[in-house]
Length: 366
Image (cartoon, rainbow, N blue to C red; front, top):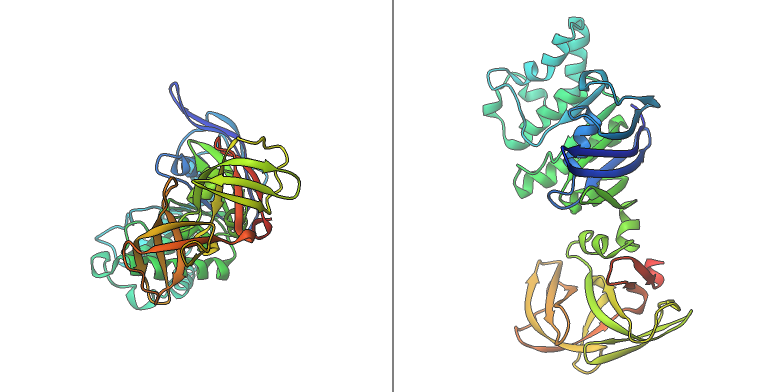
């Protein structure tokens, strides 16, 4: 396997720029997920790495070698697409071995590689079947097998689970994680599903409009989002983001007006904020607790609840603020319209500039 280095990568289609100076360093053996909303440029970036699109500007290196001028076939990479793209008239064995046969490898080597891939992906019992006789998850495993038998320097995934139903997505996600643990290869994985990224990747790169918003380990992005976009994108449900005004701030604490209430002496060090300045308070659903009305930081009413058994979420309407999501025990019953108090855990608060950047965070996010 190999390292991948992107330095100042840009991509334009005519006068329209879609990738703007992207810098990413991917270590040998690392699993990196590229995430972001539709249209953010993540699939385009993957195609640039694969050599399926020419780079407009910048430099790309694979294992230290510049590859800007090299085509896809010369880069030694393999790609698993969103659609399985299997040959319907060929058996699973032939689908996996077809690329190796085109390389004119010895029969013994082809058989060895196919057997190894089939064992890794639990496809031994399906080698003589045609794709039409397979489930969606099995077809995706065949597509992955076709890629890994080539012993690629880097394995690229372009939203490989988006065509699967929920149960198959979870099962195939586990299989991809096990595959990475077993072969230890460099993998770059594109997805719009941040849950996939959080559960699979060693490191996540969050993209928006062709630019990197933040890159880091999954829990680093979850606990220390660099800006409002990352705070709202990473996490399911997303972080509560509540507009507020600064009342007072110093190097130890900040007081904020939130709706009709004043939250005093919050453990947010933000000495540069002037009184009256607009800010945004961020707090994850697990850092909000439902209490009796009048006993919390502010009150609201239950809009609806999701009961998921072991866990659940209550959605609370608050006057003068966006709806607040609260993580709860899945057995709690909250009637619609019930008045409740909301208490914010002081160790789980974030403070953002309305323009985007993070200003301060308390202990849990420090």
